[in-house]
Image 1 (cartoon, helix red, strand yellow):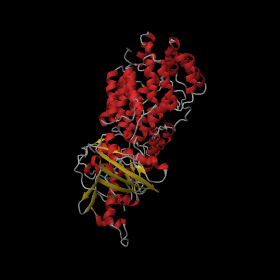
Image 2: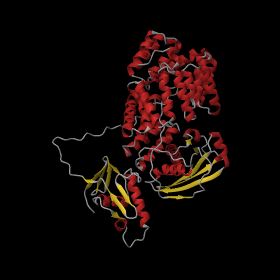
Image 3: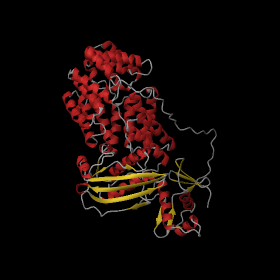
Image 4: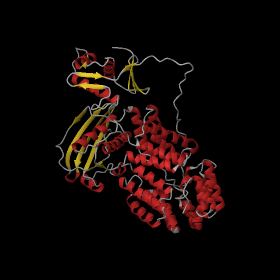
Length: 620
């Protein structure tokens, strides 16, 4: 076998080192596929017969199914090379004969240039240590967080199918129920949830079906209820359910499609995969489902890239913690995923969200975390411009963190929507950006579209949009309706703010206390006593004392003080802290016009100067 190095496209094959690289990054390829790739690359474009391949890969005295073995090796090569067998760039199949490798050239030895140096790749350090978890949520910093789903997979192989009759029923919509974790190990719940997310995403991408969002379906996790009943509540005619079990490095997953109106089994398939193949299961299943429901989408997108299995696992762990509300612990796994797979764009988007949310929610030092959030978002977009999550993260970073550029952020949000018209978070982000421009009615309509796509991702968002537009009655009505089914503390907090906007101080205080109880906040009794002593103003003075004491131990945003002093009518103090926000480039100040706390200041020249400095249109 020829030793040397060959180049083809963005790939490099180093025969001596037995290594395949893409843009300088080594790729994982098992021994037999690697041996076959070296044989093909060094064959100078000639047709390599299947008999020659069999002789190379298996000794003559060993009995194996060589046909299946060759097919598997070829598929793994195509996987590593991101190649579509229908439109091959490098590996051509000559039916019944063998394979021909094209587009390869030997790589000449490099000629060193005098004084030539290699610049090291930019480094993003470890997450900063959380300094504090806020105990007094006086003002809720409603920030953007990026949910992610992985774009992985190639054509199915190694699956053992149990198929029902082809469907005659008109499946038009599917809900992917959370996969059951049959591993007997609760620590594997992240894997079951992660594979559910990816299967949901791939179905939305590879089919024309209406796919119910993750958050809408997760409410049925562990619920033992009749499938037709679940389908009626979600408004779908198809239910996909299944289970997952990991044994060592191997993964077994079974899924089945049910036509819900008649509870009829339509299709089922069982997948048994090794560690290198698990990332492919969601797309393999999605394509099979699209085929059986006759709903295959026409897509010009390139085939998803190979993901290091360990990096994929770390990303799933981070995403599981993020969706579980354990944001501070998610960062180390997003970071680990980027370290294991430096060109893993989705992991960089997740890491950006971790840093940004940590800075906004004060469990990370914003002076350290905000620049890291920007760098990670930019990295995600550079690595994969077609990734909606990257553009959402970059929009948030450019606006809230760097140059406060509303137009640039809107362009990024619009790009995310172009790439994925079903991306609820992109619509939510666009709504918030429109509201920041005082385009309240447009923002409300955009939030309504986000809620139609995914009503459970941010159940408080519609009420919040009404609140920022000063439609207090609409905010109260919406929040009350939703809080009955979903007792989210943020909904109670928005109710508190809406009641305060209507000068209903007692109702506002009661709603705030309910929010604090749901947050397990220990200050609820102190706040209640302060209100009993002197009403809303006494509560505001209590907050000032607490923030001043807390600021001796950790960073407290000057915006929090400005908000309180504005409500108290102390303009000099409010403006002093707002000016400090400008000096610090503190992200919360971007809520200044949507925040009802500052309504009494809108006509003041000092306030208008601050708004002009930020770049907002004048307040009404």
